[in-house]
Image (cartoon, rainbow, N blue to C red; front, side, top):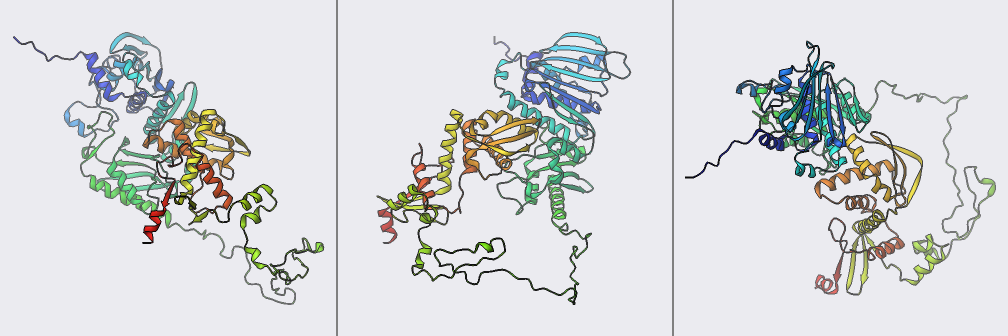
Length: 611
């Protein structure tokens, strides 16, 4: 007789399976706890994390609190106060409703809950470990709720081992914190990490909240969006076209204040920016779409970031029109301040008279100047007088010297360079379209892409400097502040040892601001702040698209940013040095992006071209 094989899973196992869907990392628990605090009507929510949430996540709010019975029941699977029947799923106006979050968290962590209602004299404390209640007592506390999540995944070591570095997990925590706080500017929030306060957000409006999260510079970058129809209302801000980035940075969609991801609606915004930003750039936006809850289905994903619309094409059309309207209003705004007097203080009505005669302006010049003279002499008495007087000299009979070798002329005082140029044949290298270097080789003609070649040279140079931490630095005469958003600040902090190895000298002065005290010696002439901005953006692109090792990523980013570009004129000596350095590389044939640095047209190919 066969034995039955279908069995009901124990609650502890079922909760761990649910946790795998809902709680993927510490940031997932942060999201669930903060959303519960908002649903409780809190006006102040404080988040504390240690080791990016691996050791501790604590969320404290001043919301309505829970009774002793509710505090015990909230850890049971599918226990929720948000819905009571199936129809309620189509009228949801709260952040959480599934009743899985606390049960999932309790299954994989040590949880301490403290909560009190205003009508209760004391609060309730419950300690839950691995879905087992260890303690339940009464404690004095203010009205509200405090959840402390300790040692996440303590009983699932395999899951804990798959967590990223502390810096990487902290970026995820900050991102979830940002998503939750953005569309609730009326609520105050704080974020404290390892004893340091990263954010202190005061209640205000949406624009103030965006500036509090991303920096005061966003005050000048934002364009207001407001569009209302019978079925859809869209409000928020978009970033000006000139603020588009190479990475999908500040892109935040919300439906009824709930963060979502929606590729189709994102296309509506990209299409609205068409022909205003480069094809490889992404616009930024912070937009909330308000619709009737009956017109959306948010119960399609455990994290509730995916949404189905009853009429998504209508939302697309309204969104596209709203963004186009905001961009158009900005582009059509007057560039002239019409409040100022039209004459700008210049009196164009002056009439010539005896007391104020009109004077014809004169430009001093030397009528005797001859560009072909060999040794012009200057009248010392004329220096600083606005004109020069030259002794008259006959025209040089050898006027062709004016068009002689530019390298010889530029290096006339440099014996080594002059000797080297004389020893090599003239026009050894030819620059084509200020982008390619052409020279002859035994087998035919060598054609080098100057940008890709220099990128390869710098890439290997920076790799070596990163390995040996030998990058030379030049100190800034006037150190510049470099302010970024919190996620980029965490990324920079993570990259500081490598950046210092390349020659950067950065000092963190607060949570989101660094002082640039020094830059790599070969970055002379580059704006230090702009260089760092490009490095951060390029690094994020390479990290997400190519999954490169950190050192390879940084070396590739630096080489791409500091290499010479196409359409840059090079001297004979510069072309010579570039070719010498290229063929001294370990991999001279290709650039870091895999493209060829040079091609050789052999004699047979050339003969075929000419039949």
